Image 1 (cartoon, rainbow, N blue to C red):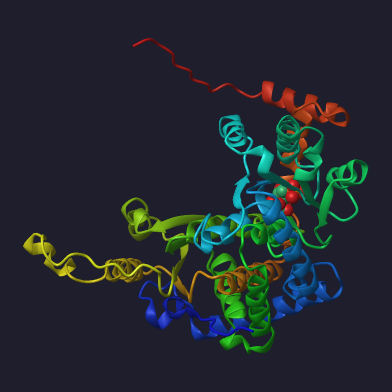
Image 2 (image 1 turned 90 degrees about the vertical axis):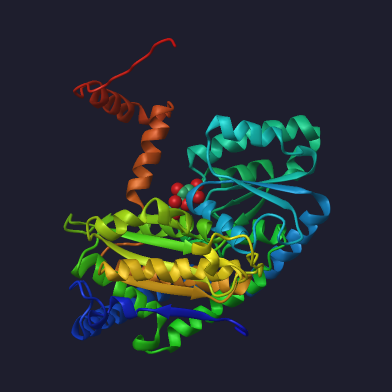
Length: 464
Ligand code: PA5
């Protein structure tokens, strides 16, 4: 296990000796930050040992993953397509891994689509273009109480009934809490096939549970290798001393730039096909886990922003270089991409001749290094991460790495990285506005407050 895995974490550009701006960490600050990270990891480990948090167990669920692989193989024989309905943590991890291994079609399996929006202009056409006679619909909601996924499910059930008549139930699978919630009740009452999400694993930490494993296995992704990579990272985290431990070192650095020298924004610049969706997954993990109030009411958190190299060098990097020094940067790339194509030797204007006759990748890599150089010159703190390859084992390790970093930073910050009271409040208001019976008082209060606000609306209409 772990054969062929390779990660490079470079923290040199957060060290004071390398940053001329006064933004770097001194040796003393780094030492203190590493001690805080160690303590944070111990606190998280205690919560894990008590059964309160369950994500560290997921990589070790070997029997479960085998069962899921067998079920997925049956699904592959029976269907051509899989449509996942879900949102947030029930969707983003699957999208990240699917894109990370090369996108739909990169593995032999069902054509997998994840629908994580209820915009009617997107959802209805998506259903219409799916061959519902050969589509398996997987509705994923840990709580079972998310309005978006419930609405999607009932529309999808209609479509399945129209296409498959009495056999429509054979096309439906629910992934949800093993005991509670609307989806679990539906699974029991209607005898739908279902998969359980461990009760102590929340949405954004659940990609290595049936939430991500079932659809990914059906799409032909090796979920065994995904878990093997995560296990390898778990072992590296458990066994290495802080100075050589990527999780603890990262937690030390990022918590420093969140709490000691606060940078309100954390930007990921990703260089490489397939890393964009990973950035979306991380964005939710970082925002929803760490954007919280401490018990004394003080807010903490860091706005996660995404940029795609090289495209966004021409849209965002000007701000990052010369704008407010309120950001910490993480540059991420694959060590080696897959394509090896060259740029033709001839046909360049003399000023561009240096581009000719060499791999296009040389330019891509130079853009990565050059942008780091530009931000370094501007004195910005930068972490650089390189991932050996876009395969299952590396992706599993990388996902698990960020889950641990987030958990440890949460402990250092003195907040609960595993709840999401803000999201729950939004869900409650939505249900109230949609007419939920028990929420009539909340609805009235909300509508009164909205009506009572001072108006600042401009609407312009016209003919041309
Ligand atoms: O991370 C979380 O807990 C949330 O983002 C949830 O994943 C999201 O709100 C969807 O919730 P559920 O899976 O309960 O439908």
